[in-house]
Image (cartoon, rainbow, N blue to C red; front, side, top):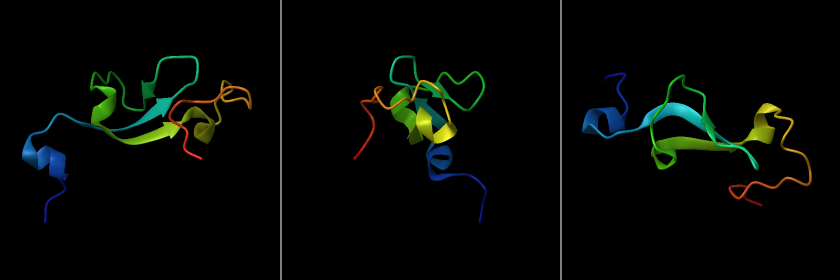
Length: 66
């Protein structure tokens, strides 16, 4: 058993960080200096999940489900 993920083993471009979606700002990744496209992140969350102030009730992310 190895510690490498499937995407690493396959040589696919990806990021192990979490992409945080903001309603009125650019999305950000938890990995410093990440240049990976948004679609190559396995985990996406709304900024309210991390206590961001821009996640007020009137600011709805296009990525929010439910």
